[in-house]
Structure formats: C-alpha cells, structure tokens
Length: 424
Length: 190
Ligand code: HEM
Ligand code: FES
Image 1: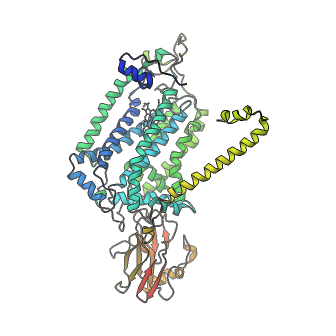
Image 2: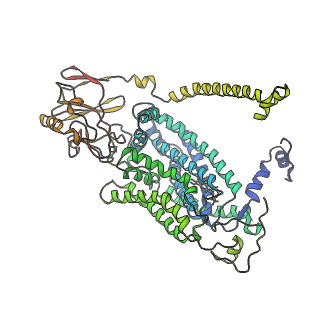
Image 3: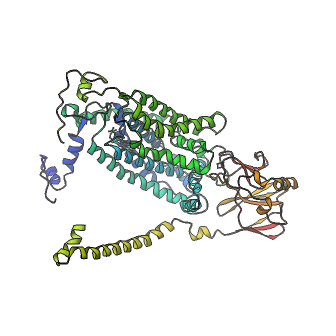
C-alpha cells in the first residue's frame, strides 16, 4: 500500500506535506465535508464539549504539576502555596477542580443523550462500549486526582475506595496492600496515584481516538434515530456543526467560568481543607458528587461483597446494554413506553445521588434500596421485555422529510422518493 | 503471518502437512518462550508496587501500659495503622465473656482475643473491617455504640468490648496484631 498520496491541496507547502502524510486530507474528510445528519439538536454538542474540557484539564493539570509536590508531608502545603503564592495558581487549581465536575456533568448528559436516542444500538455497540471505557478511565483519573491535595477527604476517600477491593475473597487483602504499597494509605500510595493521575488522561486520549474513529465509521445517530438515506439528509460537518458546536462551547464556558469565579468551592467538601490525619476519620465521608449514585448502591446492599459487586455491576451492565435493549427502534421519540421508563431511570439515578449524600438512616435506606433495585430492573428486565411488548410509533420516511415538515413523526404521504445512500 | 510462515516450507519442497506439524510445534515453543519471558519481566514490575523493604521494616513498637487508667484507651501507630489498646474494667470483661457465640457475626470467644492472665488489656487494630475508617470510642467523649466498644462513623458498624462486630455492615471483628507482654505493664507489637 506504499505510495505517495495525490493531494488536492493548493497551497504548495501544505500540498508537499499532504502528499507525504495526508493528515490534511484526512481532517478535511473527517471534519470538513464529513456528512452529518442535518437534524442534530444541542444534545449533540456534548461530545465536542467533553473534548474541550479534556484539553482544559490536561493543560491546567500539567501547569499544576509544575508546582505540586507528591510527598505526604508537603502535598497539602504545596497545594496551599499554589492557591496563595503561585501566579494565577488559584485559577489553575479552581479551574482544574471544577473542570472535573464539569467533565462529569458533560459526559453524564452525553451518556443520557445516548440512552434517550438509542445511540448504543447497532451498529454503534462498540462505539458505546468504548464510551463506557472512557467513563471508567475518567472515574479512575478523577478519584486519584482527588487524593493529591492530601486533605482529610482525600485521605479517607482513598482509604474507603481502595478498601472496596478487600471485599474479594482470598486475594482481596493482597490487592489492597499492593494498591497501597504499604499497610495503609500512605506516601507510596500518594506517589503512585500522582504518577497514574498524570498518565491516565493520555490513555483517555487514545481511547477517545478509537471512540471517534468508530463514530466516523458508523456515522452519528440523530434525534430521529433513523439512518440518513442520502445527501438530502446530511450536511457537511463544516461549517454547519463547527458553528453549532462553537455556540455550545461558548455557553458551556460561561457556565464553567461562573462556577470557577463565583462559586469555586460549590462542588467541594470543606473537610478537604483539613490536612490528612490517618488517626481520625471525619464524621462524614462523602465522595465527590459524581460518585454519589455508585456510593449509594454500595451502601444499599447490606453485605460487603454484595455491595461492591452491585456497584461494579451498575457500570458493567452498560457494556451489555446494546444486547439488553431488544427494540429495533432507536429514538425514544417513537417509543412512547420506553420514554416513560427513560425518565424514571434518570429519576432513579438522581435519587441514588441524593441517597449517597445522606447518612444511611431512616427514609434514605429505603429510597436507596428501592432505587438500586429499580436501576437494575430497568436494564435487566424492563428493557428486554419492552422491545417485545411495546408498539413503537410509525417512523418517518427520512430525515429530510421529517425535518422539512417541521417536527416529529408520522409516515409521509405519497411515498418519499429518497435516493439510496451514496457510499461515502 | 501464516502466509510468510508457510512460504519457506513450500519453497523447499516439503510436504505441507508434514511441515505444518513442525511449524505448529515451533510456534508453540516460541509463544511459550515469549510468555515465560513476558511473565518474568511483568512480575518484577507488579511486585515493585508491593510494600518496599523500608515500609516492611517499620517492624515493632514498644508500648508502656502503666499510664492507661481503667476504662480508658489509647491509640498507638504500628505500620502506619492505628492500634487501639484498651484497659477494660471487670464489668466490660464480663460483658465480653458472657456473649453467646451464636449472637456474633464473626464468632470468636473473648479468650481468643486477649492474652491469658492479661484479660484487662485488649489490643486490636483500630480499623473498621468494613471499609477502613477509624471507629470512635477511644476518647471519653466519643460514642461507643450500644455494645460499649467502638462505633464507626462511616457506615454505622458497632463493636463490643472485645472488639467484635455486633451491628452494621462490617463483616469481621477488629483485627488482632501479633504482640507480647515484655513485662506486666509493657507490650511489644509486631
Ligand atoms: C471524555 C469523554 C468523551 C469524549 C471526549 C467523547 C467524544 C465524543 C464525540 C466528539 C462524539 C461525537 C459528537 C456527539 O455525538 O456528541 C461522541 C459520540 C458518542 N459518544 Fe462520546 N465521548 C466521551 C465519553 C462518552 C461516554 C462515557 C459514552 C457512553 C458511555 C459515550 C458514548 C457516545 C456515543 C454512543 C456516541 C455516538 C453518539 C451519536 O452519534 O449519537 N461517549 N463522543
Ligand atoms: S467503614 Fe466502618 S462501617 Fe463502613
């Protein structure tokens, strides 16, 4: 397959490069003329937003690392020095800390978008599974990052989460000792968490590359959940969606900046401004908000190993979701019953988040158990049955027909003469 | 890969079937050799993350028990972990001894958890066996739970005066550490 690329770029310098390494042609194909469904709504911004946040996280993170000391007697003070002494250190740190929260907000919306519009269904199963891997990597990265300031929540969060592995019979204790590099969370733990926290975002980039590569094979889903049938159903990515994404990015940056400048500790825990003390557990250990639903599942099961398995299971189930949902119709717009269950599931996740933030007492225990049960029931029982029992609404003939008619569904009179899709 | 692997066989005119057996064997040996090689280099990498010699060497601590009054407890650090040392009152000892084993999540008699002749001293690792928080109960102002031992603030596990779990999600009793009495009022942990 060796041979020079026949570049059509006019600029001689770029042409010279493109002939030898056709990256410019590739960018033009994948982001310039790339045929994209013409009916995206703003929920389709969130993939691009996630990419922007990741870039912000990596940039701010590398700058923070230039001032941070991963040593247990100095870590807390070095973070305080960043806040007080380093030029714009407060901006770097608040930007990074809140960036993590924004990252999860964006990705959770991105995921629920996929759930609503059936973006996980054939042929996008692998794309979806890569997304779940991305989420797991993000969680690992965020968890280890939170340990670095070495405050009370850092320390005890790390202790509780690493101890989850001790639930496994026989090997559990060994795994935990291995993770710690000692007999408790201590300096070796801090050191390795720093190394991994630096590494994982670059692993993320690799997986996101595959995620986007897979996306460009299957093409994007769209709010109608039907495949584009020809050029009349698509628009070139540039300028239509570069502009639409830019609008979203501006709005996003306004929200992000508002948090960073006016409520920088909104998502934080005051206890993390107390230096880590291995001999005193804070009265209340709460993980970062984006872990609360999982933490709630963990605590809702009265058995240690059971809780840990259910918690991991709540993510594992997402991997097999494409095969649990038996309905061939993608978009919830045409699935009146699924639509109700979608919102119920979202509610269950929000309730779980609230349960995770409260002491497991009284009503919270019951709410936790009910919503944990519901979470699994939705994926394992309701979805497989619904595909068989539900009667979907009639799908529109084509994207362009539905869009030009201004709105949702219904078959179109007169049999649309959509041309068969050209191979691109 | 298989194409190139078979090519020389054909070129030298051997019978393909006969040759394939040899090829398979060579492939197997090569793969097995590679697996051993990879394993030999992966294990040191994994093991490098286990506790290092200096961490292991944090060996033993000596504790003088004389200043601890009856009913009170102290916390000392051993291998980075808090150790609870409690001077139990006769009532607390009796309460611990009188519990029926059938009532326990992790059945163990009190005698198995203390040294004979030194029943007033309970020495346990002060780490909740659920997810590793430090239970409250060593300070006089701390809540000690319904069973008079320790109370874990994280998910509400409760321990009795023998450090055995009596309530909550913790699956096991507070762990014991190796220690011995070097005199009547001194112990060496580790
Ligand atoms: C760092 C995190 C992530 C980045 C940077 C990212 C990036 C992207 C981008 C740029 C797109 C195309 C634009 C769009 O459709 O919104 C996309 C599509 C998609 N992503 Fe992600 N993603 C991330 C995480 C996830 C996660 C966690 C999941 C699911 C568990 C997921 C599932 C999907 C799916 C199913 C699509 C195709 C959607 C469609 O076309 O309808 N992504 N992703
Ligand atoms: S860590 Fe003590 S009850 Fe969970």
